[in-house]
Image (cartoon, rainbow, N blue to C red; front, side, top):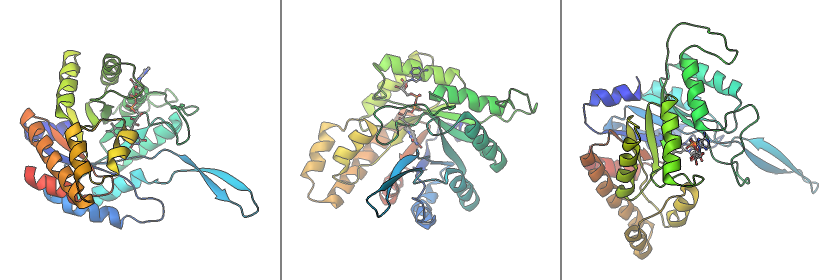
Length: 318
Ligand code: FAD
């Protein structure tokens, strides 16, 4: 079922959902299940599965030479989606990237989604490849998420790259796109970034999921500005509980977001990672309570491979 339909059926009640990351090649799916199992009591109507970009690995050849190979360390997004649908009976949302995929490959992936009964996809540009300073579109691929949204909707209408109308049957995906309460790092201003978001919605996106944020004021401002620009689709906040002292530098660096001064101070003063984890739980519970009161349709948690803290947070809220 489409996410917009889940939201409609919830009639104003806030839903719980989670994003998971495919395991690294060779590690099996069991750990992923162990992380998801404890969260099923909160009835997530959908689970997002990320897609990793390709990267270069350097293989020692033993003779002083090094071979460079391109690979994906965490493949299997669609396979995991199918497994989760089968095992838990939930809808899944594969993340579909511009980066690393030609338009043909994207088309084939979306055809697989149709065969698997996947109704929702999150359309993303992807970041620059590791080692590259800026995003370079893949030859024959899309350059911006907005173009990808248009392509996904064409497929839903039965219009393929060869330009033939293959089917009259409407099979429209419910398409999500990313939004940035603290602005995307490459955007020169918030107004510019919101205009780009509006273009994604005008191209046919059905909902927005935000980058993680730790200060609700930024989310509320973002939603107000988006609404003022005419973006009327549901906006789902992304929540990440801080869990280790390492997150103090990792989260801002990786996701280009700010941590509020109070949170940083509390984390710095915490005696160990267990204390930091507890601070992260309490911060997220307070954030989520306020977001629920504001009427957000879904609280979407970034699990990044761990779920014990998300379970504790969800128990306070659902
Ligand atoms: P876009 O919407 O294309 O925007 C990228 C930049 O270009 C922005 O600065 C925007 O203002 C600008 N822009 C947009 N359209 C245009 C245009 N037409 N002309 C000029 N400028 C334009 N990354 C992964 O690799 N895998 C994942 O699974 C993944 N999941 C994510 C899930 C969520 C909820 C979020 C928020 C992010 C996720 N990301 C993921 C990261 C994402 O790929 C990066 O943030 C990426 O840098 C931007 O993606 P986007 O879809 O927002 O790009």
